[in-house]
Length: 394
Image 1 (tube, helix red, strand yellow):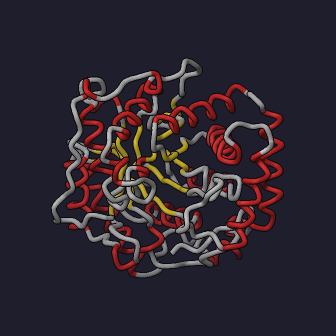
Image 2 (tube, rainbow, N blue to C red):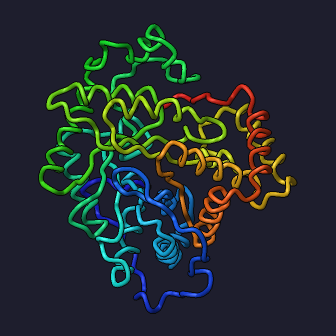
Image 3 (cartoon, rainbow, N blue to C red):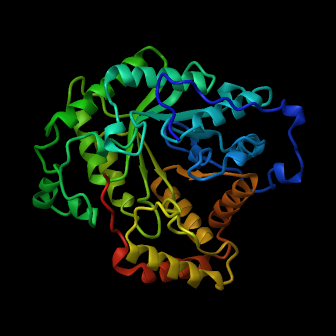
């Protein structure tokens, strides 16, 4: 449940660090260390803390010592950047509490915090990009995360606020095919500085407020996040071509760097050409679609869900530990490395941290490479016409 601005905040009380278990499960496995990628010096794996919410976990898990142990193990592995949002229910509070407990071992300077603002509920009416709300949201995030600065703040899910341009669903790589097709999405030459309506102006005003916070030293990097790649590219170009002509520092894309939809690879060079220095991609599991049990709320249509279930069954007896999730995460890590971008992945428990690092190492070291590549091809074959297809958002 999203906590409205100005309302009483939940409190998560945790025992002192020396009272939290620290057994073998809480120790990193020796092996290849994570590297840094991009101008912000981010780790190749970024901790997705949306898991610290009721969307992915029960209250009993969130209120236990599991978040602290998960956060600590991630830091021990070198996963020292965290992605969260007010929209993720108590995520900021839980993460901030965990990091406060870990402060004797990991001071604020040892990790990066990336959060969002502007989205405070499921419905389009629950977005607020007004400058006053953006400022109030950042102030609350600072308090929740027990810090006096944030490394990155994104405008959350910009497609819900900006003026709609172009087809909402489909194979969005077509937007890059030629000028005629690009014009449908507002991406043709000469359209860079076009404000298509009041929604676009709301985005520009919100970016301007984040820039003011940046000038005050409260926010280090300003960015946008969202699902439809043509929208992210259009807005990145718009910001660069609007006074004061400062490009966005960072853009976060999700569910477009995975086995079902890897369209991000085509858009990454265009986003960089728009001046965006740091790109990130999230959710190699495609919000749980590429798992044996996709969540009931997933927006994929029934035919795509069925194809994903067929792919999961195909991977079950293929002899690769972890099945489809391992295949999908490994693919996401390899594509991220090829593109030079960090991968944000949700982590709920120490076990998931170990599994993610193991998959990253296996890909880096080429372990079971032939088997992985064969399974990736088979999964893509099963997904068929759904490969590269994006659902509508909103």
